[in-house]
Image 1 (tube, rainbow, N blue to C red):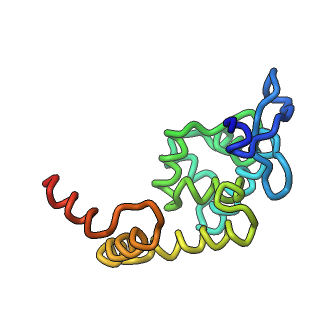
Image 2 (image 1 turned 120 degrees about the vertical axis):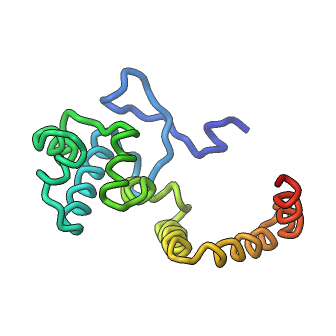
Length: 161
């Protein structure tokens, strides 16, 4: 089986790239890079406003001018680097996955409902105390085909100390 068929990739044309690219179809079709940028921009603005942070204050905390940060929220001319995204996450208190989910929920499941369920599960787990998370990992390993048993994982972790 080829990588393209194994990953469900289809050939598409994106004006941002000089050659055809291979992408997965999202729930609403294949988005261009520009459409992805627009979705990220809308999400950034909505998230900043929901947290009650002004554009000027956020730009200052990021070490940017307001006009440079505004480009991120307008989706024009500026694409955020990964280090800048990490910095933004530290300031705003979200995970990079939050923004990616908003843009590409098809990466979480085969249907919108499955993707939303996986995202909800992630959010719920994030709120659990660490000891409960460890117990949940052991339980899930027992339930997952092909995974080593929880006892084997505990023994292996104990031996590595």
